[in-house]
Length: 138
Image (cartoon, rainbow, N blue to C red; front, side):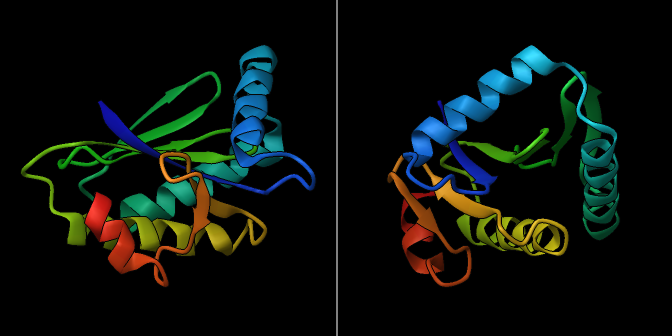
């Protein structure tokens, strides 16, 4: 089991869960991202690895995958990002919350309309403003 979070631009009139499914379905059909999305993903990945050298980077047709030693996975897709991390008893929620907030801040420099969505709680969250409630579930 894992905990998932998604960063994307909300679609007006569409439930966030439906937006996530639509984005993931569209990506599966498209293959490689557009050159602009590829460049954005490479720039974000490079900035994140520079800030946190513990990330190991790999790729797939649809984007870039970064994974750190604690099991936090950052997936850079066509039109969205995903965070995936295990429900581990040994997980450091404080470090996790700090890392997710830092990634969101980096992404906001190029994708200011992307918001962080927590499908487990079915709501958008702010990694800084909602830090305490997030720490309670991580």
